[in-house]
Length: 224
Ligand SMILES: [Fe+2]
Image (cartoon, rainbow, N blue to C red; front, side, top):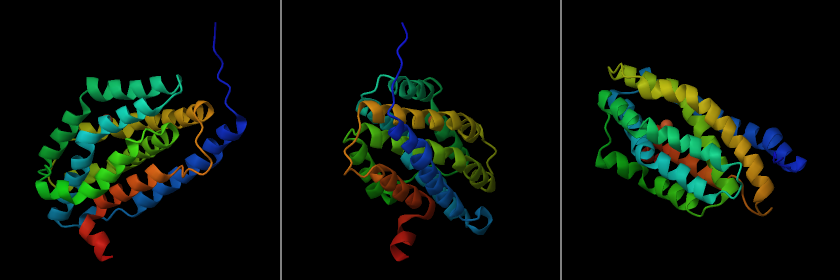
């Protein structure tokens, strides 16, 4: 027996025609805002790698797990499980740690505190366990990470590191992860639709702010 998922056309259209292009636009804006690595000081380059690591190493699996716990669609769950399996089996946190240590950019207490508030906001949001919003937030995150990898590798190169396992793995596999997560948004919308008054992009916006802090630091944003 096969089970056919009936997705209301309106919601399917919403993902393809509106949500994905909007997310792609947000990612493009962030990538365009990246400062030229050659114009950064060694300390500024180290700071970006360190803040990225302070956020990603301990939170990516946690956030994907929160998203898994938040979905009601049976079809969305395997997409998240596949992602988690890969993270844990291939030990992506260790990959990231190796990358960061090789670039002499291991996060200090100052780096962790710089992202503290924005990170807490994202953690609390994902902990509300809103399926569609969490999936959209993670689809955005995967898409951003994939686009960001070449830049992160350039930063590490400028710091004298040739370690590329983390950036090579994530520049490729996250393309599929991001597409699959958008598919999960569609199926979750059909099973567990969100209220029309809910801001679909609330988590995306909080995560965008956190990414801006990773890239530019908090001091600079406050001063701007
Ligand atoms: Fe990963």
